[in-house]
Length: 358
Image (cartoon, rainbow, N blue to C red; front, top):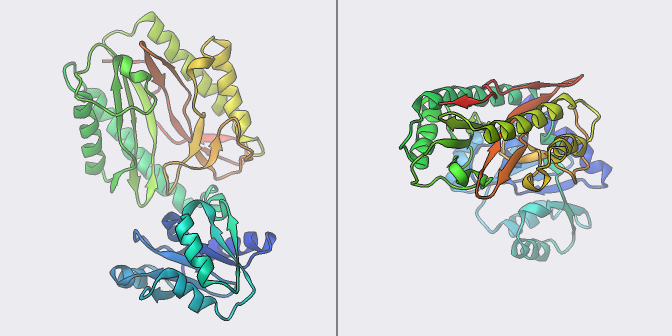
């Protein structure tokens, strides 16, 4: 395995050890990628005290052999529970952990039946907790994905015109992202105009853009890593109310970002943005979390929410995206990606957040 994967696996073994565990079945494919470098869409990793097994079927056998080093690759020629039983037969009476978020009840039942001599132990965020703190190569890939999105936004500002549909804009965002070097988009692009912009995660429609709010939420993937940004444009002159809401959201974001530093609870960052919006009289119109981690997944740890117990660490990358959504009027959201540094944070997204009138 690569030196980075080796380091990640050793950290995982150390984390498992603190929980009294030595064996872990990894079924989340993103976690498999993180630990082994295997980029296939299906596979299972088994961590033991001395070996790392990557289990794939025939379709991915050659790919796994090329992409990984010093990992024992097993061709899946029988059902996974039976294969696991073969590997673990020398480790009877040992506890075997599994990812409780990424295994079905049926799979658990079948694995438990095959590993009668072992005790299955559910775990949560064993690998995801490690993934929350990014390595330098991960940050470089994220930065490239963000740069692509910044370029796309600049293009879209000159592309958007009255009469175009929301879907027209969404398709142009996705097409331009790929032209600029993205392997794909990270999630379904959100383009909402007028009063439809009050839907935080609404889908673009065939409706033609009219004067007023146009909310854009999009991202792309570069070398496996995601970007995520939201900007709100105004077709024509923004009204006084639109400017007011935009400036409240922007100030809430600035306050939250100013408070980011190692050792601070993620819930405190959420609270700073939420309290400012509440002080301005719009608390009931901000109902989602202030941010989320971004990396191999578009939503991962840390959660920047009111109920998060996570503490910020250098190397964490996440969004700060307060918003105000008023049914029948519209919504405004501004989203940045930031990285926690040793003494604060830096903003990765470079696109302007000021009011843009087209």
